[in-house]
Image 1 (cartoon, rainbow, N blue to C red):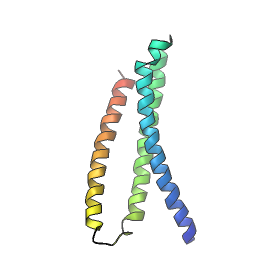
Image 2: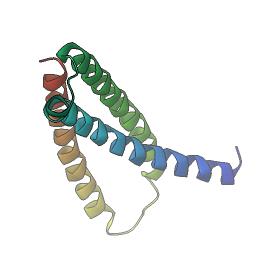
Image 3: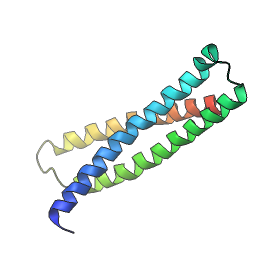
Image 4: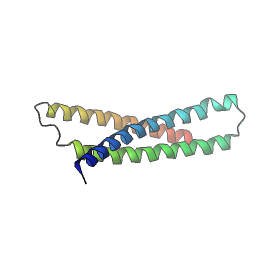
Length: 118
């Protein structure tokens, strides 16, 4: 693989990681709207809304899988890229960020599950 191609793969992986993170968040918004707003405006049967909500829940789970896979690649590519005195601080902040995001993803996915399979 050429060096330029490797850089393109890194950029595409990072873009995909960020894009799918936004997609995961949008599945939560859609589930919220389907549960709380759509029944007030449209007369769609509850069973139909339930099935649609389940589809968005599983899209969110699929998004989490892609986020984790692309996150591993990001970690692998960037693990030795920075070699300064600030590296230990950057690593600590990244660990804290990922703990916080792990809590957010877990809570959000649980919320989506409880709304999709109520």
